[in-house]
Image (tube, rainbow over all chains, first blue to last red; front, side, top):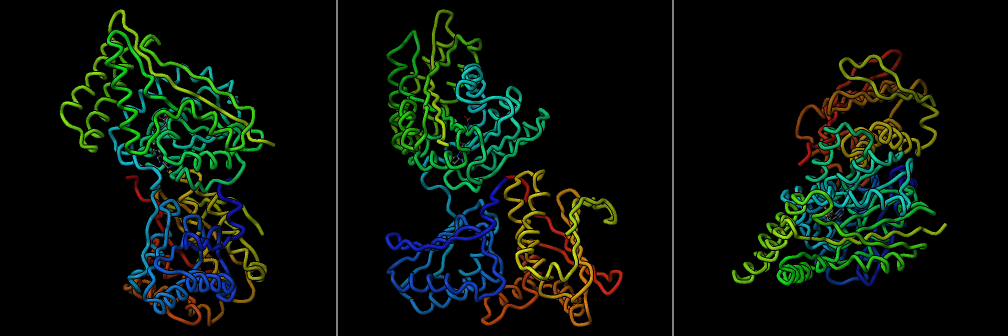
Length: 392
Length: 172
Ligand SMILES: C[S@@+](CC[C@H](N)C(=O)[O-])C[C@H]1O[C@@H](n2cnc3c(N)ncnc32)[C@H](O)[C@@H]1O
């Protein structure tokens, strides 16, 4: 179950390289005196640093008032004694209570600040989290599902497994999997509250019970180790600038013997005819546009090595091409239209591109749409899926 | 320890879960506060829209109440903890055996909670040196979890402490 092992205990450590004091787990002592070792480490740590002292409580799940009182006393005392030091407490919005609780310290001493950590390793968040992305995700999942439903069993998805879909977006994939594969449990996690709200609504409209939608950070999940047979993460490693952090979390929550499954794109390889060169130019530019925002939309073929480096075995990789000939040319065209809006609209503006560039950039998308709807045209979007088994 | 689902006595609230235990048993091990609150939190949170977040908050709130009871009660009698639900609200009912001193503590504490200005009382209590005030957990629930408290006499030498709280914000 969720976070059960964390309940038992807590960990405290100091990393002098980063001047970071970290507390995690559950801290519910009966008496303040039980905090002594922790407070002593806090005091010696602060004494050894200059500038900013960081306190990481992103994974501190539980803290009673006895422990808070002891910590608060020590921090206020340290802040008084060291006017040269700033104390920065890093919380996570996922925990629920911590930003508010630690925030009370700032009122006592403004040199103690609280920062709610919000995935700074994910620079494109604002583009993708805004509501406009919902229809794109819906159409993409509809199109990829035609292929993935027959691919998934080769990567270990079988009826009755326990699974987690990390960075689930609006949750369509979880719903499709629930219908087709009837897993015994599905947890779907994302860091976008609006996407999760949408996902819950879809699941209730389609009367799909039993999917647990959880707000969380894929890089710091509060899910317990080793509890899922199948852990998927689709179209998401490619948007993080530190995908290895996410992969190690996926592996951590996977059961030994279970499989981690990822899908990613190599966007520069989108293609179409007629007007191949214009289409190709635009997607090459799209790849660069994402790179300028620290996202690697060329990640697809790199996923083999990413899984290998994470220590997985029996790695399988394959690719499929979503095309206008899969049976729904209009849906393909709709998806490209939505891409054009998001990328040639919002993202180019943010980068400060000039009108001439944007016009040429848009033309490739329009040619791709025309190819999709052309009676003799062909339009494609390639996707790579890879999975690996966690060693026993 | 007796853990079971029951379904009576909470008015329009529907009871979800109840546990009862001899007070001296409960008060023999501090870890029971953590275990009981975590168990309750897990059992009642699965059908809230974000189970993990809900269970975290509920466990924090209930734990503070249980820690208060652990410290302040009459030496013997039955301790009952039950949780009932009405839509987005949760009602925690604690039946606590009391003597004259502890009865007065609970009555006084609830009176203070209903007097207003709880936030400054809570923050003063948090940042005062020396031992923590025994009502700190109740203050925290009132301030951080917007809990509303009431108290009533219960059979035998006991009081019923009732906390109503709403932990789920509506989705953005
Ligand atoms: C490109 S979408 C893919 C969504 C979905 N898997 C799909 O295929 O439709 C990437 C998702 O990652 C989510 N995300 C971004 N940062 C995250 C984080 N730190 N933790 C969890 N999810 C995150 C975004 O909210 C978004 O829903």
